Length: 223
Image (tube, rainbow, N blue to C red; front, side, top):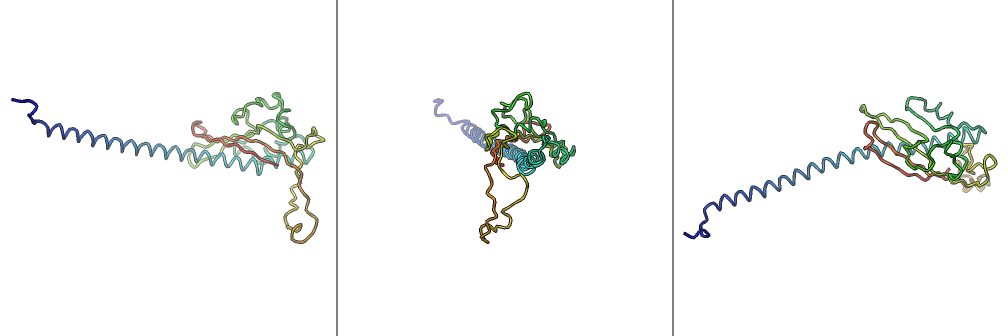
């Protein structure tokens, strides 16, 4: 008998090979589905953290920095955080750096900041000696904590404070362009704004109980 010409068992071998190929395809499909679910969940968590960071960014630019300038530099005081603490209180677990640190960051370029007032002035990590932090409650029981830190100030007025105010922008809160009369009515009542100060701000939003769920934003803001 020639063993090479014997075809007994070929059907079994063929069926086993087809079964193995089918199982491989099924396992690949399950892997792709599982990976897609994990990626979708990770993207959802990142988007949530990113929205928290965006919220803090808007708050810093539209509320916190203007409030500090108006309540300290424009008012001739050196307590920029007093108005913030009265505005936000403890409901958001809002915290600020010291008045001495914030006055340095509002009135001096970064090269003149001191570690005695602002801690680690070299680190750009917003969680390391943050200037502001607050907690954003979620619909569940696990809120987000958001940190913001001014890591660099570039003053338009090079004269030292208090002669130089760092920013030449008007701090009165009056919008001289409101009526648009300087262009439509020919009235020369529009005051041209001076050069603003430029701040580089780092923001981080992260899940309070899981710091892996986080997002970082870098902002260049002129005021």
